[in-house]
Image: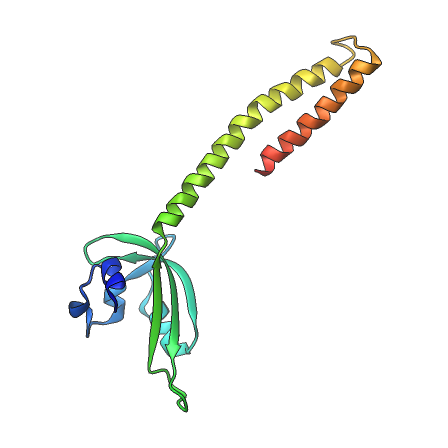
Length: 161
């Protein structure tokens, strides 16, 4: 266990040695579901001799909770069939996830705020094109229809956003 893993788990390296990895690297799913011992990524990689890649929450010894990207690979010595251990790469992605959330919130809010005036413009253009409401010449109708088409397109772009 290196110093970065010690910081993330809040377990000093010398205290973590010799303790069950499932206690030191206590984890739960991103949606806060507990991970049973048999499903712990370290156990799965060791027993099933498979590489495990997951995004999980790491629960620190003192209560800190961070989102991590975890890759656990079994260690199999040449000429052996059984795993002798695992190697794990743990990366703190909490900041990146928080930024993704803020970015998604911004895009959602901006998209909503932009759709509102576009809907109003579209409504007024439709009123102007309604023969029962307004009398317009052929050339003006052509311009208004082009504006309405562009407004539909812009509204669809915001919807897709």
